[in-house]
Amino acid sequence: MSFQILPAPKGLIKAWVQGVAVEAQAHQQLKNIAGLPFIHGWVAAMPDVHLGMGATVGSVIPTKKAIIPAAVGVDIGCGMMAVRTDLTARDLPDSLLKIRTSIENAVPHGRTHHGGKGDRGAWHDIPDEQAKVWSEVLQKEYEVIADKHPKLGRGNDLNHLGTLGTGNHFIEICLDAEQRVWVMLHSGSRGVGNRIGSYFIELAKEDMRKFHIDLPDRDLAYFPEGTQHMDDYVQAVGWAQEYAKINRALMMEAVLGAMRQHLRPFRSDELAVNCHHNYVAKEHHYGENVWVTRKGAVRARLGDLGIIPGSMGARSYIVRGKGNPESYCSCSHGAGRAMSRTQAKRQFTLSDHIQATQGIECRKDVDVIDETPMAYKPIDAVMAAQADLVEVVYELRQVVCVKG
Image (tube, rainbow, N blue to C red; front, side):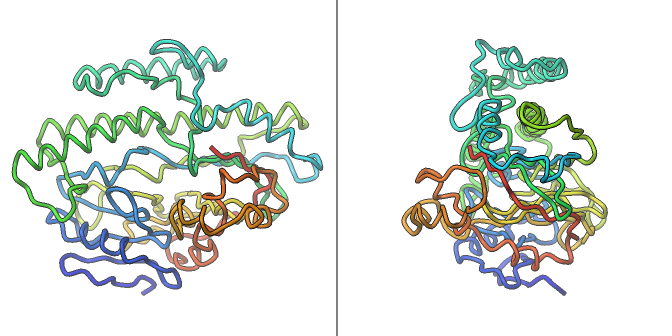
């Protein structure tokens, strides 16, 4: 048995954390969730588990006839995409600065967007015809959701389509053991997903107050099946998850286009993975159809390909799921933070960061110290703790990293 049973006065927690520290606050969050009456079986904790907003990052939460919007969070559909090319390390120039700059110019990142005007502005900046079709379909579907809930507004939902965002979102060029070039990126549903998540989280809290339902943490407010708010949330969260997937695909096309300005003609369709790690879906586990919320976890059914990134300067992995039922067929979504962003900025210097990212073409300034490799758990320990959840297919090392 590779998992551990973490103490919980109510419910059950199965945790793949051997050799990995679990902070006391994260453990308390897990206990609060495990004690809810609609948990199906147990809560599964992945080796990158750490304190989160609303619910624990690195947790898998199966629920019967209910969903906790704050467990899904506000970065709805956040996840990873990776594409293998037929390029090799020999095709890359000695200096990768021009390639990084071209990627930064091709994909809006940080607190930026495509700058389109009106509700349908984004696709005017994206030449691909498929992007235009996706934008129009997404817009029509969102109008239906916003008509039901006008407080969501119509904002800059499509201006953000095809953009990276901030924080730990990134774009990387990597090499595998055979020196093949990969492109990998991490992002979600951007501003519109944040609006949807925040709105429905507050709506769930209002419902709990209205019906006088006491919870160990107000962020665990939930929608029960059979209610209008549940139906509306399922529709909205499903839309945001699709938006996030398309967002990653559009960014990938932009990144590959930027690389083609500097490299020989290459193919990029040999192997591609596009997977969520902040989402909710209906699945069948232990004889019942239940809602499974993966907050910082990747689905890892037998044969599923997934992506587990390390931090800046650390290795990343393309993995294949082993379909372990104890984890509800899941694995970690990354290394997991070892400390808060504030603590990382206090503890590490710019010199520390420069040394940790030696040999990688990336930002080396004080504004990314909170994302420095030392702020995260060791990826080797995280991978060892989940050996019965996934097998490693490719091990990647970064040579270029663009941060949000």
